Figure 1 (cartoon, rainbow, N blue to C red):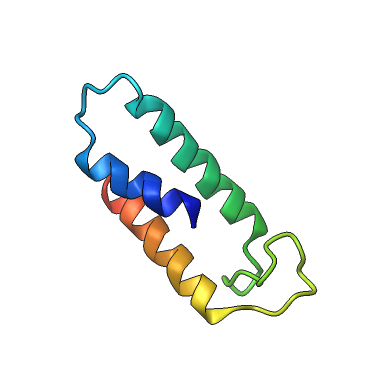
Figure 2: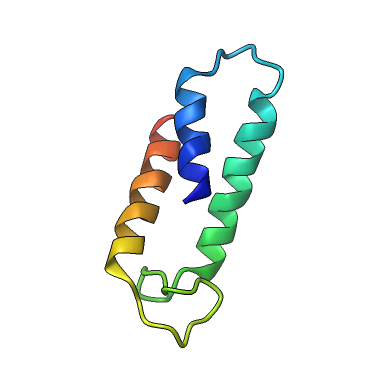
Length: 74
């Protein structure tokens, strides 16, 4: 997940870094995009934009972990 790296970067990036707000905006936009593709049962499909693909447990764990870390870190 691309945003996992951005979330980790925010962990070490100084609060006053001039690019910090842009990274936060990217993480928020990614989270909104993920929410829009989440299935009715709360899981994501192997291909996020293809609800006819199967729900993938590994992807779901990774996405949930990244989203939880972003939320917990503000």
